Image 1 (cartoon, rainbow, N blue to C red):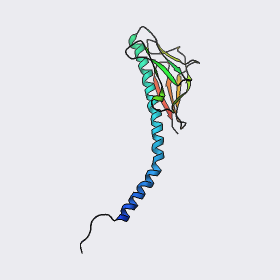
Image 2: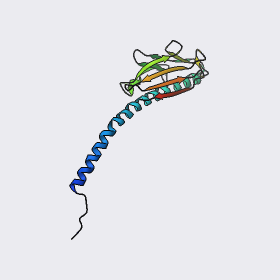
Image 3: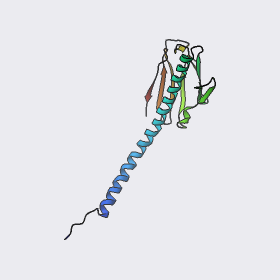
Image 4: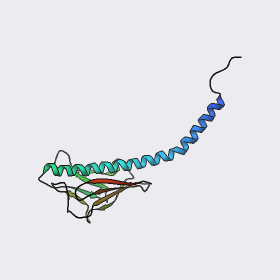
Length: 156
């Protein structure tokens, strides 16, 4: 009698059922990762805009440059790269559920860089800005007095 090679229908059905169960368990985790990934992308984009504004203030060497944050409209203005115009940007570009939840800039909503790259007005406290998403995850962006920028995540 010749030996047959291959899988039986029963073996194939069992493997497919196992794959469906694993996919059903993993799908919510992938969704959570995607939502938090959008928050990370928005925070990194905002950080790059802050760094770019600082670099522009240093390179122009004759004027201060500012970013103005509008928490009510969930956007901010940043100096354009090649002109004196302003661009309005929003973290919603990455996902509609990302919002600017808090701004701690000495009671205001403007972040100004001097020609040395330091923030104005210079105060001992760092400036912070927090983005949140629908899961309750947060990205806190901190700008030190010397103009350094870093982000801390609290992911849910």
